Length: 398
Image (cartoon, rainbow, N blue to C red; front, side, top):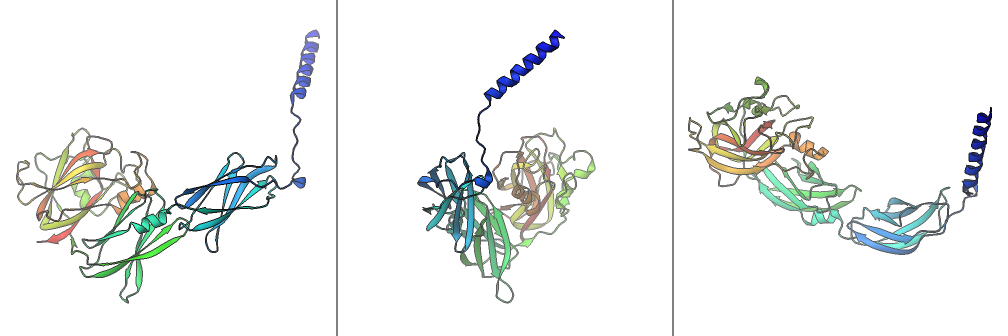
């Protein structure tokens, strides 16, 4: 009984002690909530396409956040918020370097706003203007190439237009990218002078002016498939895990899904390694596309996906497999659009890898050839095997 009394006494003492330690907090009744005082002492730091606005927060206990209201273009209102734990707010989406007005409100927990404080901001060169100002066009095989700079890696949509049969400018395709050095190709046009136009759009829906060019695509044609297997004694062509991953899978017009219809050499076969095939026609090649393994793209830009390789051509290969009679057509390197580390792919990376395909343009002085030797120097994970989904070639048959 004494033990029980001691326990109860001790518990009562602890409860009294704890209750004595509680802070005498003043809780805000939202029905009696008052608007905070405005922010003060504003300072503006210009950003590309935006601004960072610093301020002193009011001391009101009811303060919850700071709200900015502004227009990025006439009639297009935007809002930004910043918590009461920071002394700045970022406003962005401006399509130009003109002066824009921003109104700042301190907001209470009961959503009551202070009187507005107005500040003028002027952004640095917006990504939209950077992309538009650096657009460059060049005639290429079957169409044109479009390049631009996007150093801030902002999300951009670049839309290409050309006249249809009625002479009306019609969208050909839209290229989405965050790459620092954007580049895309539009193909499938006859070797005739043609007008093209490009408009750039950012993620806020801002549109650039229209850039026009007129050029003549260089003639090319698709080198017809199927090609022909041409295994030589020094080649690496033994498939991994059975007969389903043979060289002929790279010209069956199927680039996926992962693990299906791909060339996959056996692990342990060493690096560098090469395989050979016959185009069945002699052709002056203009370009080719490599489609990586996928989708789903768990294998693109990693493991045995080729990263560096050489393309060699011949019209009379040595039957013993030596390099006699071969000429190097070009050095190639796979480039991931996002630039992310190995194993971290964006949706753009995955689309590019096995749906769009990596595009490689051969030198103009490359000779016409019939036989191709693909010599892999390095994979993305430095492994001793490779896998490829598909290879497609264009040029001019002789």
